[in-house]
Image (cartoon, rainbow, N blue to C red; front, side, top):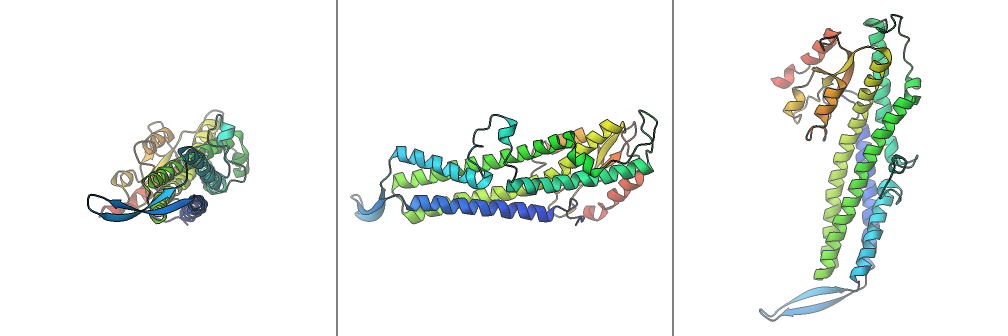
Length: 320
């Protein structure tokens, strides 16, 4: 449900994404920890002749070559859990970059994308009926746009594939970084003779960092899919109807909202301007902002000014 605090209404989907990634990282951690425990080792006492202190160290019976092989296995486990395949480690084409058709994250990304598309279709139909009943290119009345036709159109499917491929790339990066960092901890611990408990704790810490990164990916990418769909459809609809269209920025008005995000609340932009802003710096990271498709005149002003004023009025309590 949409609120001032969560204007996209994607809270449940974000939670699903966080839980899904955390569950898969935990499954990978268990498999990797089991591999580590199976490395043969002997415990011995070492005395420092300078201070006569005796410490316990472990001698792990594994060669550097075997550690390299283990690193490949760790990478494969993480890829298998997070991407459900090991074939996506080095994609060479868009087809290989896309996840399997039944990939769990595809559902979590497709749901908000399709939802954003459907919502924009409904809004655009309302604009056609109330504000711009005739196409400027032909002068004939514009027919209502079908949600189903849009969702199945080649243009929208191509846009969705780009969103999914972009998200897959981020999950792949998470997988590869986690594998690299875990092996660094394991290799350093084995070479220095640390106790199994110490090495396990270090591996745990690296997975905790990955889980935090996964949460950020889920929060960011679910909302991005939803708003990307709106931007994509606005572009397609504007091109096909000849109507000038843009978006109004709707900020999440909560205490943690960044000031530069709140400052855009109620302002109208072209889709290119909005995308450029989101692509700048960290504006997309953890962003809960939404956009609404609108028609704009030759001067870039919103045709339905009442809607814009209503949205702007929501910000009054935030500025107090």
